[in-house]
Image (cartoon, rainbow, N blue to C red; front, side, top):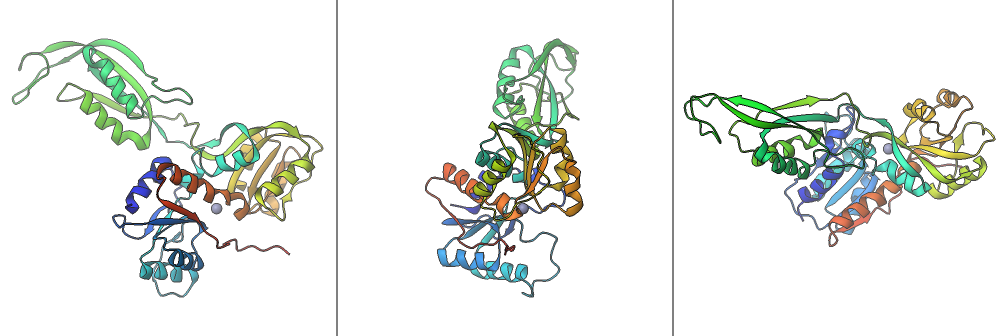
Length: 364
Ligand SMILES: [Zn+2]
């Protein structure tokens, strides 16, 4: 298996363009064209994880957190990051990071947390702007159906649980072919009027290349007339955090016990209990204090996240229980999630979970 095949599978799920601006997801070390027999999944790629990959013969490490995060000005081995990278390069081991792009898809980090808690009716807590565009394309009526089918097959026209969504209006287009043209209809040098359909479809911006190429293949004209329009509408399936419902209301003490058990958290730091049951739960794996306001606005009874600071706990204002379960604990099942995903796509490719505990935080 080529490393780039594994990367293509991961990026079809969580495209790198969906990562946050500050992030550095993607292939960090290694040649995408090289062969790899197995992969090792971890949250943090440390020197010990590279040692483990060497021992287990895994040529690719897939980490949630990027080992190269803020850039490097030298590579001398003076800290763990540099030693990790040097060892990976010397050992011929590739390192790939799938970080905030996996946070920003609903079937990613937060979907997994929600599934572990048994939440249903899941939606994104803070849908990300700039993900949706609209294509308007003009096509002779005779080819409208074939073009619509091609656009849908390339991924256009999806809205929530609906697909094949389009708007169509018929009108008359005109054109005149100049020297060197070979028009589908009409006579060179004479204005031609053709009954055409304007097809409008929305699509997720990263799919634009596929969609335009499918459009041009299915369209009979030499020059296809079309408009690409950025939308202010937000894609409801892409963005930070998630919110869903427990099957039945649970009292707050029982809910915190459930969370501790599910995520193996020795300690949960939380705000005062309100004396009301928990039904709606917001979640954000990793550092999620930035979504406290969104969780409150969504009417969450509890918000499961990590890295919450003293002053940020005050923002619950008695309306919601903020529970900081630990960064590692909140993301630990991300490893299983990546493993399951790859195993489903490549049944014969070995994908192993690290045995190295990389959580730097210990509790006494
Ligand atoms: Zn994290």
